[in-house]
Amino acid sequence: MDRRGFIRGAGLAAMTGLAGGSTLAAAASAARAEDFSPSPIAPVYRMLVPEIFAPLPDPADHVPAIVIGSGFGGAITALRLAEAGVQVAVLERGSRWPNDPWRDIFCGDTIPDGRGFWHCTTFTGANRIPVQFDAFGGVLDVCCYPGMDVWRGACVGGGSVVFTGVMIEPEQRFFDQVFRGVVDYREMHEVYYPRVREMLRLSPVPDDIYDSWAFAHSRAWDDQVRAAGHTPQRIDSSWNWNIIRDELAGRSLPSATIGRSNLGNSNGAKFDLNQNYLRYAEGTGCAQIYPGHRVDAIAEEPGRYAVTVTKLAPTGEVLRTRTLTCDTLFLAAGSVGTSELLVRAQATGALPNLNEHIGEGWGGNGDVVLARSASLPVVGTQGAASVSRILDEAGAPVSLENWFVPGVTPLDIGILGSLGMVLDDTRGRFVYNPADGRVNLQWPDNGAAGYLARAREVNEQAGVPGLPARPAWEANASFTPHPLGGAVIGRATDRYGRVSGHRGLYVMDGAAVPGSTGTVNPSLTISALAERNIAEIIRSGR
Image (tube, rainbow, N blue to C red; front, side):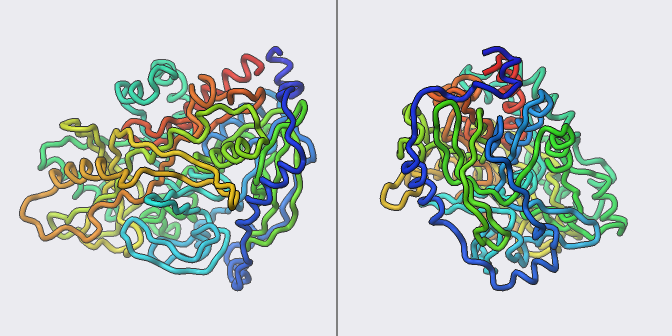
């Protein structure tokens, strides 16, 4: 099959293997066990964000290409396929949220509500302070497994809406240690990292913003690490600095300048995927995005793939369940979502030729959230954009990034937050439970202990001796916002994300990454890897 044949969207689905309708229905039924009860205060949300209650469009029964998920991997895949003339349907379980400089579209960490979280009622964040709220289809999904909570996006734009905007290229020696020669670092460095940087307009914080009252904590953080012998490095981010300037000047309601990021930025200060890749994909006329479409199961049929979808209102009400078909299927539902679909399909026989590596190689990127006391009183709020980082290789390599303190107060409270990422090889695996049809993460007992201790060591060395006692939550490795693995490239797939044993099926997201991106946030590497893989898939026609 040549490239032209691929672009026509014909003939690329696997031609062998048959998943019976009963098998697919059973898998979908297990997934639908997670359907939600409607929120009793939906009218309040309808008033706050009426846009997400607009009627949801429906995809055609058959589409040449389906992309599951609208985060970094999915958005990039959709754009490049659409540019090649392929008709693409992007399926996203969450809502498509607007931006407005004078409305609180999203809630904050301090007093969250249902807009913040995907159909749950309690949340304990990095600061270990539990909060309660009503159930609704908010933007952050928290998956709780024994020993590890995983944060992931549940909205159009996926993780780009709920991350801190940091986009860093890893050191080559760390990249090579993780990918083990499957992916060529030089190619990524020379072609695909720059491509993403240009698309997302990455840049470090400008000096005028760094010197503002909203980033006094960043300056204090830099002063401390310098005193400890480190040289802080400015880091690239996907923020629109002009909108942050608008906040500082009173031309927009505060958002990024008061530590809003984990649950979205109402004014669009974060240059998320809705403002670039997804918008450009729709602009081709070949890609359509379908919010409120949760994928419950996937299966192979002769010559095509079947995708069982539940259409959801923001309240969780089930509007419709149907099965779509496509010639080619691109999995980009995030590490957890993609792994769940593959592991369940393997266990039920819906994808009978998956190999033994499905579900393996999952890691949390060595993430640890840390805190330490400020040297002097810090006057100002804690802006959300991360400004700088340090890298310590005295032991296991670990980076610390300047971070804000979420979920306490928009005013500074004398605590400096950091996000630590340790180059660590602790891994878990996803497994299917036939009793309830769920896919669970098996994480080693006390699996974070080693990298927690290493990150704490560096954080304490960066502090100032003689300061008051550390905050009660000074280190937390019980969760990760950076889930990676489960369908690792070069193991569960070939070197370009083609799933072994199933022609026309691809993994395009963080599930392909081997559990770590080498002491940096994964978003830039996930994006560059998606750019690399889809370029090869289109070029080769398969």
